Image 1: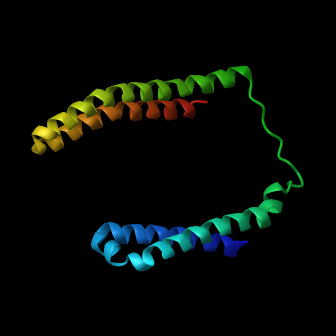
Image 2 (image 1 turned 180 degrees about the vertical axis):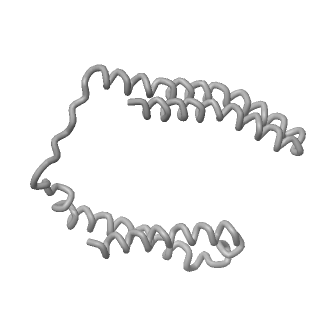
Image 3 (image 1 turned 30 degrees about the vertical axis):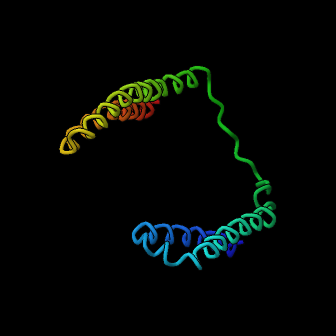
Length: 147
């Protein structure tokens, strides 16, 4: 089974390397069209064949039951509500960051169309708006430590 995982990894690596190569040298993509499509097609076929092989040969390992199942610890209602309460700051701050980034991003694009030298300043404004989500995540992590 490890050879299938290695085969899939090599196919993915081949696609990534060819993508980076043609991004760096786009002229090589037009010059080498004769071998480009068969090579990428072969990588994709190998990847999907390896996935099917993993599915066929690895289904036994995926469905195997452990001999002794570890007893799951049940949560009380209070602990469940505490975990929900911990998730609320992350959710609300993410929504607020989305609401803030929308207009700031649109205004940044409008300014950059007229004055490209303002890129650094607009990036700082976008970072400040996105920081709202990070503050909510930090609060949730600190609260999670209290449980």
